[in-house]
Length: 329
Picture 1 (cartoon, one colour):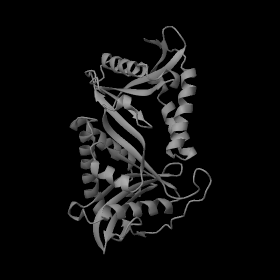
Picture 2 (cartoon, one colour):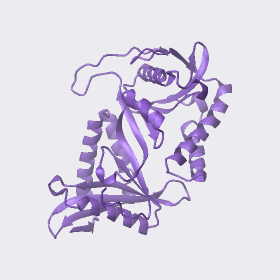
Picture 3 (spheres, one colour):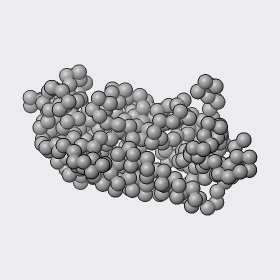
């Protein structure tokens, strides 16, 4: 039997949680400074958390579970978030994890949440029946390896070819003011479609989030500092666009979007554009390139797989209230 005791002073849990989170980010390949920035962001939500200590048959601690509740969009339905669910290795396989997951689901549903999300730093069969909401992918491009061994240095350039196999050459040029307006409209529409397809929000909520996020990210349009919005060209003809934010985290460039024109897909430009993004990243002084991909976007996931971008975070969710998973799961 698993007992749950609400914790009024979460410092003991917090210490272990941050230690485990730091180790997970380190193992996933985050630069040390980037990992610390992520942990600072996690700390910012402390006030909204409810933490419970798991004990068994009146004995010592067997694990922890922490949940929070908030709105994905102002005025939208509440979303529950499993901030942490950890079972001591010595006590795993005894049903404590399933009990903690059920506790988080029931508590969130009772508070009015219509979905429950969890962020995983590695695959966890406990959440295999949750739907994939999105993934964060990462690749180290240059600089010393984690063991101190020098990595081969790529040469920053505005022209790149697909280095993994022969492919088309692409050049990157800054997007013009005339091109920016149509790109912005199309980008916001695509973002809405991605959010809805992933099951994260309703169409109206997704539209509100898209409008707000683009306004926050690009207050000065293409002139916003550290943002690099370029047109990809092959033989002088536009074939797609790329939007990067350099220094998103220390040493990390974040790829907000990479689009190949629909009528030019299947020609190898997706792979070649990754080489452009990597060279732009190195040229800005960063050594890591990171992308998010929404659940359901199998084309992008496949591109990142073959390009060597590993999953470092995976976001999963379930609707609430939910039925118990099949006994075989």
